[in-house]
Length: 121
Image (cartoon, rainbow, N blue to C red):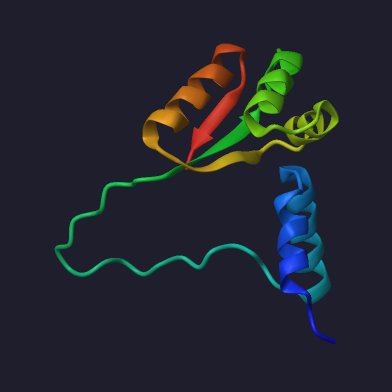
């Protein structure tokens, strides 16, 4: 059976974060694999750590102001209200990936302002 790669990619582009998360878990379960990135071995001796250039924003906990957190998640992800609620309910979950340090800190501050717990990775 040949896969229609272009069609699959188009479907993935339109998926919410929650739907993509569910897909990853289903694939892991079906095929007995893990999507976790392998841990890299230590760098060359004496090599300085490179400055991190992109950050992922992970919602660790919604806190007590869950409705406010859902509204922010909806705003920043472009998800529907229902998908934003499912995302917040599924915490811990990565909300945005590959952000600059300033963008990541701005989103973190916005969420923490309404009581959420956020981690930058």
